[in-house]
Length: 82
Length: 152
Image 1 (cartoon, each protein chain N blue to C red):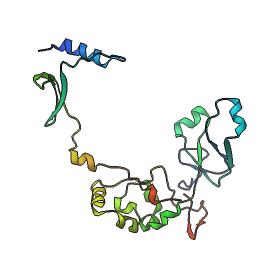
Image 2: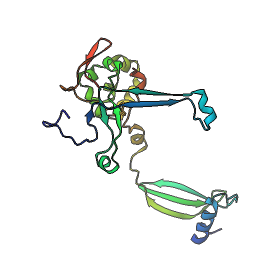
Image 3: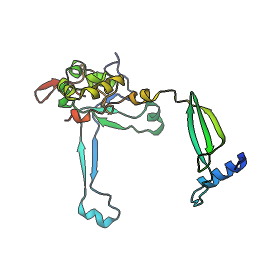
Image 4: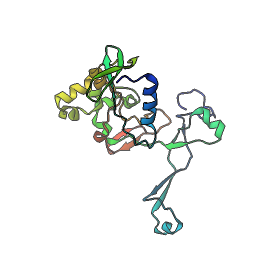
C-alpha cells in the first residue's frame, strides 16, 4: 500500500506525540548507509519495499574502526591515587 | 602572576592568589525540614590555603563583582611513579602518548592487545580536571612523602 508524503508526516507526528498509545505499524522506516549517503527506506511489516522516504549525506565520515580508535581522554585515575 | 614581569591588580582566570578563605560543606543527606537539622548531618570545613586559583572566566569577574576560587593543591604522590611526569609535570596540561600516561610497571601489566588499542587512538589527556603550574620562585618547595617538588 502506497502512502503519500502527507500521510507519512501525519502518521509520524501522531506516533511521536506525547502520550500516544496508537500502534501505527503498517510500515517501518529503515536507515540504510550507502557510500556517503544515508537513505531512509519505508518497508511493510513483511519487509516489502514501499519507497524511499529520505536521502541525505552522512556527515559522519569516520569508519567504524576509526570511530572505535578515536579517543581524547584516558581514565588513569585508578593508577594515580593520593 | 609569575609569568608577567610586572604584577597586575586585575584578576584573570588561572591567576594564583593568596589570602582567601576556602570553605567546604558536606551533608550526608538533604535536610528538607527544620526538624531534620537536629541530627547535625552536615559539616563545614574552613581553610586558609597557602594559594588559591581564580576559576571565574575573566569576562565575568567585573560583570557580577564576584570570583570563584579553588585552593591550590599538592601533587599526588603516585605521580612520582611515572618518570615521564616527573620530568615535566606540566605535560598533564597537554595531550600525551598513551604509553606515557602510565608508570612503566603499570603499562607492562596491561595486556598487549589492550596496549595496541590505546596506542591506536593517538595522544590523550589524562587527569583532565587538573592543571599543573610550572615551578617558579613564588611557589615554595614542599615535601611529599620523601619527594620534593613545587605545588600543583
